[in-house]
Image (cartoon, rainbow, N blue to C red):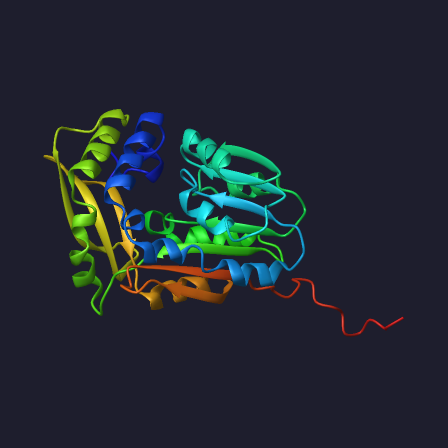
Length: 292
């Protein structure tokens, strides 16, 4: 019996995608606060400056239905090609229909697999690529994910990702303040449906929400929905709520360089634009070799 369900188990079936969308519509602060929507338009000026007049491709990782990406693209030239990737294929197809591009495709993808990401990214055009990663980082292990993305980034590629932050000075107290955004009836309906579909079947139990230290980083607050039963509790859903400094440390440890960041007024969400650090060649020039 798993101690934690894989994130893909919550989105793998079209019916679960529809339930997630209900959660997003009714509970997401993004849809009810103009400051959060503006957050995804602001990076456009910096991205336009980086690409200049060059054509570019868009790789939308974990795009869901493409709502946040559409806000960004309204302020950018149309990409030459779009690759929409999500665990739920029906959501990825919805995003591909919504987002503008000269060529489009949608695939089901496991964002925890670096080989899967590298293979799919190779299907893009040779133009510089803008990679988006919105609303995903809190639910997956941040360092392995950022490192796997950085491995296939080229010199002129950009990564624009968002992170749900913990407001205030205390990570635990800040996460408790926003717990009602997760512990509500629409979210419970979605998670309970995922539990019923999961195989092998989970033992009888009930859901409990709380704030806990992240297993890999004790100072990082993690909101969890746990399936309480007669055996060990099973983590059904988790959302990391880092501080700004913790996100900055992930960027540095992943071999990335921050170009700019934008934080919304309440401090509950931020967007980072980063670029891969070009590392020196593993085969240094032989100092004894004579110049021609």
